[in-house]
Every structure is written in structure tokens, then in C-alpha cells.
Amino acid sequence: MARKTVIMRVTGMVQGVGFRYTTKHLAYKLNISGIVKNLEDGSVEIQAIAEEDDLEKFIEAVKKGPSPAARIGEVYIYKDAPVEERKTFDIEY
Image 1 (spheres, one colour):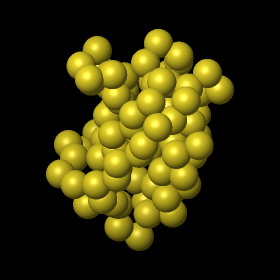
Image 2 (cartoon, one colour):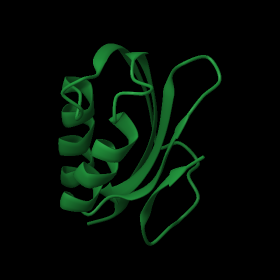
Image 3 (cartoon, one colour):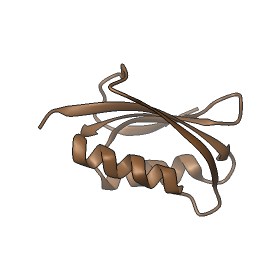
Image 4 (tube, rainbow, N blue to C red):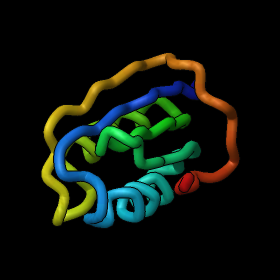
């Protein structure tokens, strides 16, 4: 099965609530590689690469909010986006 890519921008109360750390843990469980980082506008960007089934599970979990303290506003999803190939899922600062 071919690996797919996605870039997501998540708005709402997603900074300062453990969102990046819980997203990294979720990515690890689903064999996702990529990055998660805070953006200056208060949103979070996720770039992910994985097998299609795992990627869909990841997207659905992010929509629900991997951090219990987070309050998800909108999740903008750009499938088949250009994402740098990685072996791990990292938090960028």
C-alpha cells in the first residue's frame, strides 16, 4: 500500500494544553511520521505521512482532539500535500 501525505491546520484552544505532545503519542501508536508545530496565529500545523488506513485514523483522532484539555475549532485538511519524508514524528519548536 502506498504512503499518503496530509497537512492539517488545527484551530481553537490548541496551544498550551499538551496538544503537540498528545499528537506525537498518537502518531507513534499509528505509525505516522512527520511533524507538529505551533503557528504564530495560535493554531497548530501537522504534517503527516503514513499508510492510507493509518493516516485516516490519525485524521479522525486529531479532529476529536488528542489532548483532553484542547478545544478544537476547525481542522483544515490538505491531502496529498508536499511533506518532507521522515522516519519519526517530531515536535518542532
